[in-house]
Length: 402
Image 1 (cartoon, helix red, strand yellow):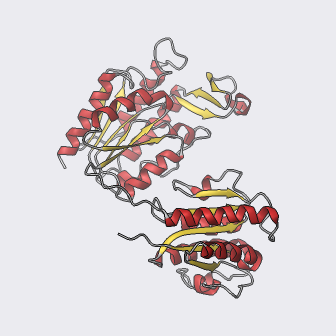
Image 2 (cartoon, one colour):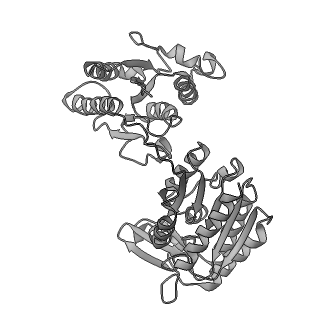
Image 3 (tube, rainbow, N blue to C red):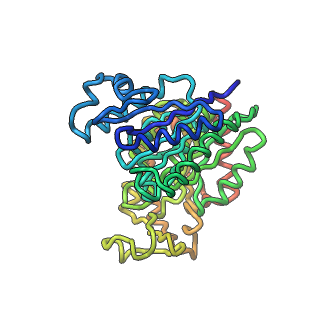
């Protein structure tokens, strides 16, 4: 199948027209097709391929929903309109955008709905900050504009030239997904559950392509997006630690939608309590005052871990259990009685059988167990060969029943 080659160049031409046209010209100079799309919400610009009014017409509420006279609502509405516009195009080879915070929000909203592997480059004044809201669980390349995008100069020309050439190269040389007869599985891992996932992958790799996701907040989202998009044949969600950070102020949180795909798809699912013993913070000085007297472990100068308490484990168990109850496919949730991470073992700083017991009891008492949805106690530590073999065995069991 021939990949689309058209590159959409998007941004507000009323304030960044020169820069956007410069990028489009550079792409065309590479022999590629470029379509300049205006997302201006105040003063629509001329000399573009797709004007702002045309884009605004793709908003479900029509043009009038975009050009409201209020900048905040107009930016949000234009982002939605551009999302619908991009989805309507059948020739999207890639998208490149330029913008400040508003422009970045508009362009990346459309970028996020494109399939994994679609080249996307965003040159932004906010690219050096926290960009998770713009990127989400997607392979979007963010480029720091260095100077403001407010006129062409020796710095901006260099940055924009690099960005234009990069998107052109990505689209021209885009590699089609390799054919693999093995179905793909999603697995979640953290440093303290790596031995478990390594063993599980070793046992499954001959039959399945194993895609491992680092459970750093965005990792779980990425896995769930692929599951919802139909890329995965099953999930071994061994490491659910992102729930800790969501509920207790950590820096690597899940979203409230974690486990949401279980309610949408009947995928075989084996889950566990990997690293639910810890909340992640940055350096020790960043730990919130209310947690300063807790059991803290300095993992490295950039990461400090906090052991979860009995009360917190009860809350997590109920939260997870409520979401497991929404599942429409076969679920096996395994409780590793010997410990949930490398730090949760005899002699290790987070060993706390009482906290684990509270977690396990809360999950068991919350989950409405059926033939398809079961919670199972495993008398081994999560990284032990015995636990790994049990996880694989249960996955095979529910997979072959489909």
